[in-house]
Image (tube, rainbow, N blue to C red; front, side, top):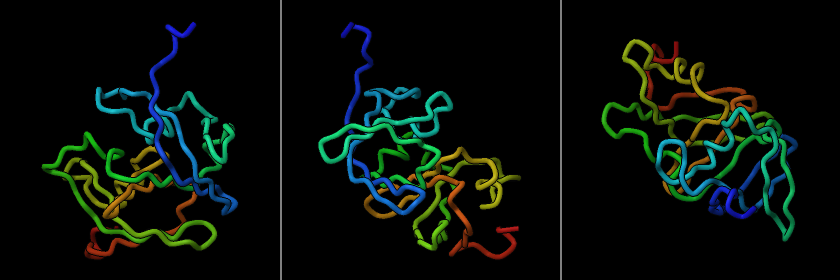
Length: 159
């Protein structure tokens, strides 16, 4: 039944599980995503029809419960491809994760002006949100975010 198989591509990832354990491995994503662009890990993680994600690590493939994934680091910026460049908010943030680890980067989002604060984005986003830095994107599971600081925002933008 090879003809029914969905063409996949392999993406190298670093996965941080809720217990602090890390997996360096590969995830499989469709060659083409729902928006017609190259398939992304974030689309697979935010798919409500999948609870377990196949991950290849150390020569074995296992199924990882995506609700137990705190974050997934992906090299490059393909995970935020498709976001319009004009009109987007770019907000530098520092996240404190469950367990005490901190992550730095920026959130890029497009929302109506009336709902363009960081708090609006945090309350409106999907389970996994892309935190962008210079050379990678970390897909952060909102359940494991304890605290968020906007580094360039004025205080009134947080409220």
